[in-house]
Image (cartoon, rainbow over all chains, first blue to last red; front, side, top):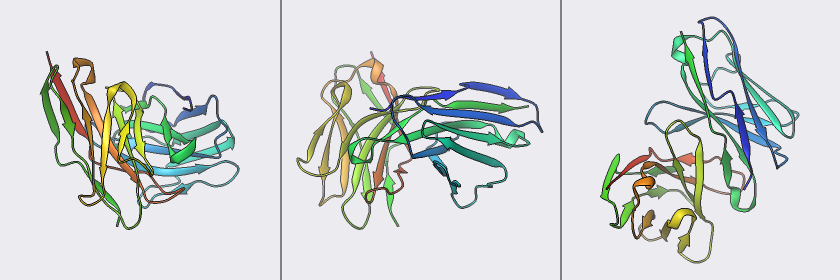
Length: 115
Length: 113
């Protein structure tokens, strides 16, 4: 399956700063990537669908000005959490859809802690 | 609306015993069904999928799942559990090609020696 690299794996930042998370598809050209948020011991919540060369599609209730997504190439999508606050602390995971049967392959996730 | 349910928050099994993690779905149409596993502080790893064909699907690490259309279920099974199988397991469904992946709530599997 596709290999997905996510960086950083862990980030701590001060309230009010912005944090960028990178998601790379290492062996597959991904026109579509997905960004999820996960709270401890809970399921994944789809935040947005990232489309190469065009605007991301955000799920209802997700602030697009707060969570900026850029998908400038077929191998890289970034999620920027702008003016982060403690309530943004969470585990963020990206995925790539590849291969037959709509399989999604996930990055290792980024744990964001906002102080 | 499409949904996936995992009725058990936690499943406890002794090492060497068979394990079952339950999943039921509610969709209109023919679903694409998936199982993923998540280890602590990690992303999800794909285990297996059902698209069409044989109802019994075999996947990674000795896991298998059986698609039951009449019961709208897709339970994950393994004949002999290992301690290393302890993790969080997610069932997921896509209604059709290119659709969104909808996850169940997750089931924490604990395998004790």
